[in-house]
Image (tube, rainbow, N blue to C red):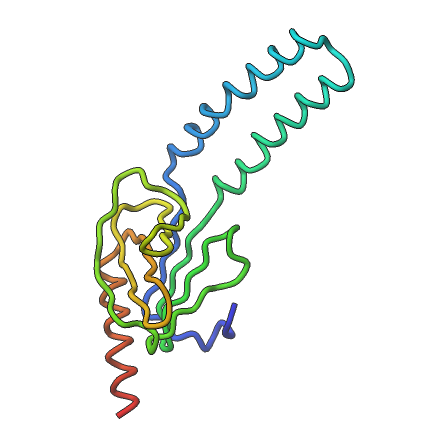
Length: 170
């Protein structure tokens, strides 16, 4: 974390994870590869050391990312100096957008079932479990979209932080 726990002065905090149905869905979508690969490999080559290694590698490639994907978490905070967010396990530390770098912020709604972390022409989108959120337009970089189950509260906290920063500068 960027600050000591006691000096953060949070005005907004939220943790989001993938929806509960996502785990069974990812496992169900992984099953064809897990079931068909051994059948095809062993039917073609028989059970050899090489064919067993191919099957084990396929299973590892398909199964290994699942625990990380299913436990991924978007943690969003609005503090006195800006917006902090971390999408674990993709970010090891918090990303910081200072209020001075925010040009505009708007509440937006995304397509349903657009989950995850992705790069688009309009910037990064962080959306684990909500089609609503805020788009933060930055002065020095492309905008980012942070999904939120409480988009109005997030928008209000960011706007309040920007106003407070402007008052402190006067």
